[in-house]
Image (cartoon, rainbow, N blue to C red):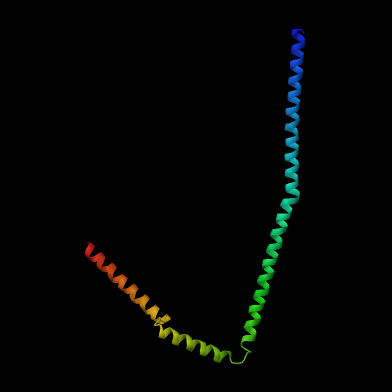
Length: 131
């Protein structure tokens, strides 16, 4: 075998090796493009449809709940003894609160006002003695 024949065989085998690499690369690019197309065509569309479906269910559930609340408010006043039950409940809660010595709303408001006044006095004293 001459040097020219050996060089020709080497070039041919290199071309064959590069052909395999190029073919694999092209197949990879084709596969990636088809996968992207499939994803955009089917998966993204399904996800968007699912979001719309869930939003619709959520809105419907809220509508149903709001209607139930409105109807309940309408019929509450028509029920007998609602007023007396509310009074008994409030009286019962007041007695429980008194038994465990919980402050009322007015007690807490008075305490808040007193604490704010005390805080202002302390700040005035701090300013007075810091100078």
